[in-house]
Image (tube, rainbow, N blue to C red; front, side):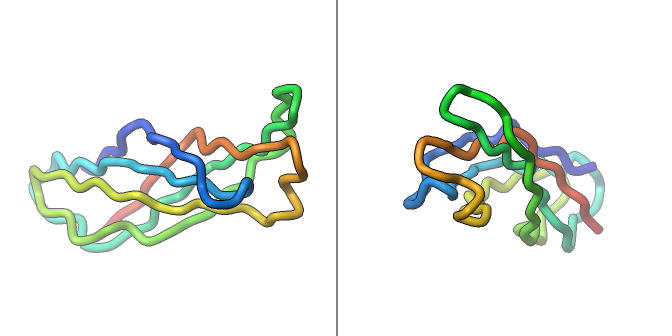
Length: 99
């Protein structure tokens, strides 16, 4: 069983990117050998309106041994044209699938 912590967010070097740090905990009896991390990134307007949610995926930092955890920071970006001046990104959900 692999669980993911609540994402910790930091501004990226461009307004359409942010740094997302998560901790993966393997509470199972075998190592997670490979997998995919999926990010749900919201596009937020100047007045706080949620305009869209864009998903993207990156590789799981595998292997993660049984009964251990690993923290990883990802740079998550959306297409620049989706985030005009005055808007921002906010990654609210991180999910993982593993083998």
